[in-house]
Length: 262
Ligand SMILES: COc1ccc(C(=O)/C=[SH]/C[C@H](NC(=O)CC[C@H](N)C(=O)O)C(=O)NCC(=O)O)cc1OC
Image (cartoon, rainbow, N blue to C red; front, top):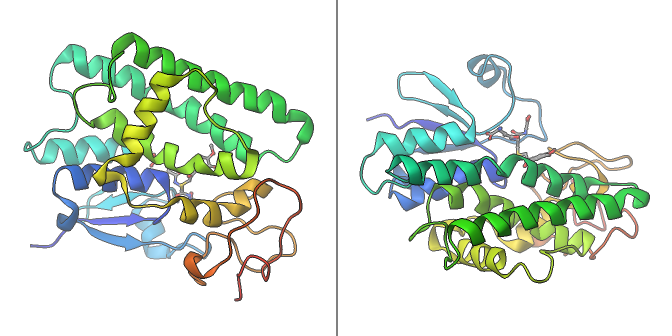
């Protein structure tokens, strides 16, 4: 039987969400993962399938129908196979889960704006906004799940949504020296449990720090920085062969210093 195809970027957090849920449901092998190199022009055939949008992940069903948006794909796969449901099953618990998931967009944006910031004069404000997002999450968890570590008794849909962002925000520690503010113990407990879960081990801290280097200099989604020939997002040379970039944003490194020998 032809498997559905998930077009994805290996290190993209939105793709990782889907990988985590598929791993939780034992469906990882039921999907054909097709890697897309966003540092190169998109395949016209894929662009035609997505009607011109470029954001990944994109799911192509066996009959050619196309689905997009990671949150949609999470629920699609969770509902496709009734076994081992990941989303909560009662209206109230699903509502609480959705309230937490509704907070993810602002949380993610705050983190990416902080890591991509190039204006030292704005850093304090952006760091403060990030702190505010952490406080909102800590307050929500303290309110709805004071014991934890998860929102409910197991790693669920909200954890699928947030864990890839906790993974990416290792770049905040490395390039901005920024982390969850002291005292937010409930959020730290949640993050620690999410990061340790066996279904969420697709991307390492080393991979994030090396691949997201260009984000720290304001270039996202594979965009090229001035004077550079290769994006830090390229697949080759493999990130394992590259040196660790220094912590902080002291001076921009060139391709050679980054181990990007094209
Ligand atoms: C808030 O700023 C950011 C937040 C997250 C990401 C990210 O991880 C992209 S991951 C890769 C990105 N995918 C998405 O943004 C998907 C978002 C979509 N809403 C979903 O949930 O599936 C992509 O395909 N980019 C290639 C393209 O569009 O051609 C980047 C940000 O800025 C560059």
